[in-house]
Length: 522
Image (tube, rainbow, N blue to C red; front, top):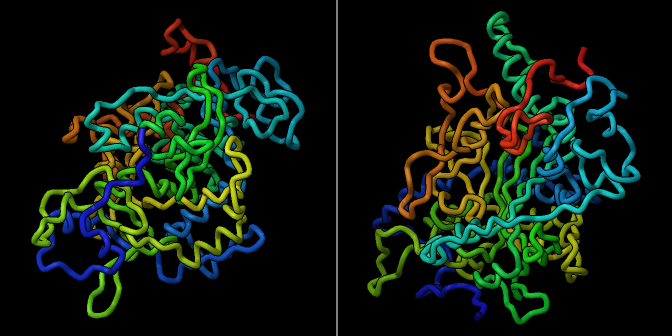
């Protein structure tokens, strides 16, 4: 199968230059105004030296500089080698032991193991949360791609969705996040269900006062990194890499790669990092951002790409001044012979290459890469191993950031990567979806659907909820009683299992009574 770097667009040569304001904007251009807000204050110019970031007087960078903060968060996670952090399957074991009440208890999971100096000799205790990088002999973790196989038409119209149907998604959670989940028994269904019951009991007698000891509130240094890995064979099928290279790769802008063992032997092999959706608890609703490889087909389809810090796009020139360099709009469907843009939204599935978008690395981001030691090597030393110095880290772009449900002028915010949210990018809201993360008395999800709604898009995929949360998702009508207990935007609880299942289905646990809610609590 022939490798292609993208689909040519007629008259593309002029696109590297700033645009001039069209006489009559199309409907798509008008609607993209609501996706093109400039996020960062002009003073947002962090610097880095010897691995230390200086925000140069910015007191609240996540709020004032969400795009710059996204880049700092990404590069810091790479520098810290996030791939050694806890993964969902190590945070939520398949057969968990219950939480110990105090250090030294037996036949239970003791979070005080996290206080030991790392690496800890040997393998982690079976059935207990752990981070692979903390141990000298952790179990081999295997990947399981989705393998749903999208309909053929999706390959052309929404190639990000096609990859989503083949990807192996892995979520990594840093040490503060692992510790909080472990110590607060959020890793078992018994712990989640018992917390729901305890909170409703407290509501029946302690209102109007909030029981912060029962609420779920992650520490401000908690970080989660969600990576979309795609197997080599699917990357070749999608024409994203050249099969004649060894290993197959994009010759102009290589992908980050790593060798992984598949749960099914056929899924073992080289995997390519196509997209990421990450979050930091530095804000009450978390700071969210999406990253995509520059060569992903359809990278800026539907909602565009927005980065006011790392890359400057071509923008628009008005009265000699350049504006909008933060935003790459979706491609129009065609360029008619008369030069007028059509009113039909987007030419889907094309590559948003720099020669078309004008995206240029800013000096500020280049300084962060160098100061944090990311992508500094001339070549990838070993395609099978992840390395912060791999120059391919510089081939990724910020899709956008999200720090609020709406803008200050009432516009619903959207954010999603073409792969991670493939099929519903034009309605995706990381914050709204994750705000629904909740549990019921059985420790099962309290709000069904994981962010999806009943309305379909034109391709037949469910759209995602967006905008501010609805109190009816969580509370019974007419009073302070939980139907669904929020767990601070963390959908990882979907992976929780019972320590003692009631039956083979694992839907219910034998008992939710007498469960330890917090390690070491009186």
